[in-house]
Image 1 (cartoon, protein in one colour):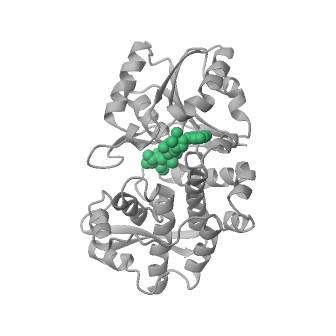
Image 2: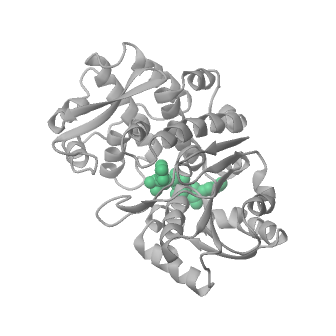
Image 3: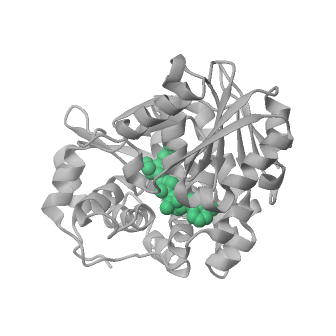
Length: 358
Ligand code: NAD
């Protein structure tokens, strides 16, 4: 399946196909002339797919080089970016060459950032290998690295020349990582696609979803594509993709590294925001329970003992998305439709209250 992302200055295709990685050389050849190609990946993905991808590219006539950073969020840093600039310079990569990001969201954000800043920008492709990256982070052109003070503080908007999604890569992904991607899928359906919601309702569990990954990923890519086409630079509508994320990020950060993973934070954040929205008449009665049923089926957390309310409040109000004493939150009007609500910052306290909730 091919979906086109149509933007004013640059359009490109998302290719979603089981087994596509085995033919990556042909795909890249359809986009680029034979040239130098640098592959940026991480150590885990490199062990699984690096050699095969390089071989395929070479067979298609490309001169390749590959660098693998350490797996994990700590690689999304200016220090690693610096190492990558040095590597690209040593490989004598020029603006007529290209870069491929092969990995999860960390590699995608980091390599996209490096590609968009090295020599003022070189061509790049996204080859996402986690479910989260396949349904979310590889689409839309946001790149970033973290600094010691904040996540994603430094970054660019830079669109790739193409995105290649092979659901086969999910077979090697840890179950916890698969579930994190599912949290984003549930989010996408909840905010924008009631048909996808019904489809998810018909699935039994995570394994069933992975067995139908091509179809589900395609539906999510359409949602993200539509939002990005309308708001490429994140000036309005794109914010709805943040449903569950404001509280989710705060939980992730205050719980300490790895205790609550990103997707788990999003799951908990969606539940918390929705139950308060339901209590206040902003969302319809019973909608929280619908979310709970869906998330529990995929073994995502819907409640937690880790709830440091004051620290969560501090984390949220220091977040870059609060502006002029106002904070924007996303609530569900119904399954498949979300709206952005602007609140005085202080009001977010009410949305952290767990009384009367699950
Ligand atoms: P990740 O890239 O760290 O990948 C998770 C783990 O899975 C890593 O250890 C990785 O080595 C491993 N892995 C990757 N593919 C694998 C495979 N096929 N088989 C086995 N293991 C594999 O994490 P992620 O969840 O993919 O991405 C999280 C990042 O994405 C965060 O930094 C977040 O900020 C970013 N993000 C960006 C956007 C955006 O729009 N740019 C959107 C959402 C999230």
